[in-house]
Each structure stands twice: as C-alpha cells, then as structure tokens.
Length: 446
Ligand SMILES: [Zn+2]
Image (cartoon, rainbow, N blue to C red):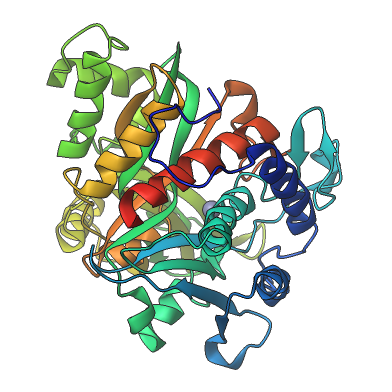
C-alpha cells in the first residue's frame, strides 16, 4: 500500500525510505518552531523553511503583512515551460492553534517521535502536509524533473485566525501571487473508516460551507431587579434566541453532497440509493451529515448584565452561522429577521464568506483520484463538502480550482486530535502522503 505500482509514470527512482526518514526529522523539528496563533510569529517558520530552501539552492520571496515583520509568508517557485497552462500552487499554512497543556500526554511543541508517530501541535493541521508539499517540491529541483507549468510552494501565515495576515493580505496586496490554475491545500483527506464501515476512503475537498458570523444585540431599559418590566434586554434576547432555536430549516443538499452519497452508494458503502429520504436519515443520525446539508446555527456566546439586582439595558449573543454552499447571505438575513420578529434586536454581521465550489470534471481531480487508487488498492475517492472553511475560499472566489487533498489515511484513533489533544501523524501516513502527492504533482505538471 505504500509503494507506487510498477506502472507508475517513469521517473527517477526515489529512495522513499530515506525521504521518509528525512521528512520525519523535519516534521519533528518544524513542530518545535512555535507558531501558535495568536500571536502567530510565522516568520519563525519562514526562516526555518528558508534554511532548507537555501540548502537546496531554491530562491524564494517573503512577504510582510501590514508592516508586521513577525508574520511573514514565503513563496518559492520552480518555473515550468507553461505548455500545460498556469501554475499549480502547493498551499500550506504555517500557524497552529493553541493547546491546553494539561490535557496532553506529550509536550505539545516537543515534536516527539515515538511508537511510529510524530507527536505535537500541527502534526496534522497542517505542518505534516507542509512537509509533504516541501518534499515533492525539493524532489522536482533535485532530480530536475521537467515541469510543463510552474510549481509553487506557498507557506502562508494566519489561517487559523481568519487569514488577515495571510492569504487575505496576499489577495489584496499581491494578487499576482494567487494567479494560477490549481491549488492543493488542506480541507480534504483520507480515512480508514467511513460512516462506520472499514474502507479506505479519500475525500477530495471541493466546496465549503459559507461562514456568517453574527452578533445579536437586544436593547431595553434598565431598572431595579425588584420591579420587573417589559423592556428587560436579557428577556428580549432570550425570546429572540428561542425563536431561532425553534426555527425549522429545510435540508438543502448541494449537488456535491448528492454526488458524495451517490459515489458511496456505487462503492457499496451505503446500501440504498441516496434519495432525499435517505439523505434526511443521515442528517437525523449524524451531526456532521446534518450540518453539511443545511444552514446551521450555533449559539456561541451570551453576554448581559452587570449586577444581581440590576435589569440590563443591553444583551448580546454571538451566532456562528454556516450557510450551505452558494446560499445568498442577504436572503438568509431576511429570513432571520422575520424569525426574530423584533426590531429592538439588531443583527450585526461580523464576518461572511461565500465561495463557489470547485468543479469535479478537471484534469487535476482525475489525477488525484487515479494516484490515490494506484497507491491504495480498493480505495474509494469521493468529493467532499467541508463544514469548516480554509484558505481555499480566497482562491475559489477568484475562480481558481482549489482542492482539499491531504492524501493520508487516518483511523478513528487519529481523529478528533486536530485542534484537540495529543495531535499526531503516523510516519506511515507521512510516507503515503508524500508518495501520492508527488505522483499527483507529476501527473498534473509533468
Ligand atoms: Zn489548518
């Protein structure tokens, strides 16, 4: 399952044992580079990556957002002859999310290598993928592999905190860097189990729900707690939130979601034709399958009041809304206002992003599918719609085809560790991911 099949495209023979050893050592080292965001300090990662690129004789540029020298992004390019079109960007973010040390059994930034795993914050999200991308990039330089399009290694800051210092900054100040045909990024990956069945499955991320972060603010009149009146802002907010909770919204599966279930059906993973009724059953029994099919609302913070005996004049709540791909933000806000039905409750839009899906009928999609199946016998490859969002959104809104494709196969014992405790990546997965990614890049750039 870890060696390319004999009919793989001819090329220089690559010593994957040696590269796996190198990649393991690099990932361990890279995890020890503290880029916890906030505050980020991603320039540390840029310097670390820069030393490797320097040693290989590969030039790169660094970009400093809003004058903050601690938060740089690195871009390196191997030029191709352009005969197959515009560039492929290997995209990775260098920052990682914070951790709660007391719940970890290893040092979160220790990069420990033990029991066949590299342990630490970022092993999966997404320094591990960053190393896989780096390795295929270096292989192209070392073996002087022919490139029919530019191959770009892009290590960006600030993905975990909204990308203002990362791709959003590049999009605004250096849009030429985002000009490409394809992006491979996080936001899709493989698993050894799907919907409770043992089956190696690769999910290619093609689309994401659109985040719409809202603050609800209720206004009222203060007063003494001993004399209740009708204009208590907290009461008003609670009534609005109750109406939102009671709001029954329909399932609206996107074409990509239907395609996902259709392919699972054809692979024999689900037994019944994925009709609306069957999709509704999945939604009923699985929170992720429900979220992926509907506009979801999570109440995330509540804030009101100053003292036990004072009626508050204002009260606030934040809602994390995620719209199904393509849903019109304004339309949703109109519906929400009708549900709340109280003009003393204002709705403030804090953050919104809506992007079109990437198509399934591209050459890169075909190559990823082919190479995943070549490396892993019997693997099922399906399109994925993510409930979360990634930097791919910035490329997709520019019309670029961006896929989430981290070609590793994680088991149930490895999931839940992303943004959680004891994050880790197996060395076997590091090897598999490097090989599939490398063959994919050869297939679309060679
Ligand atoms: Zn990530």
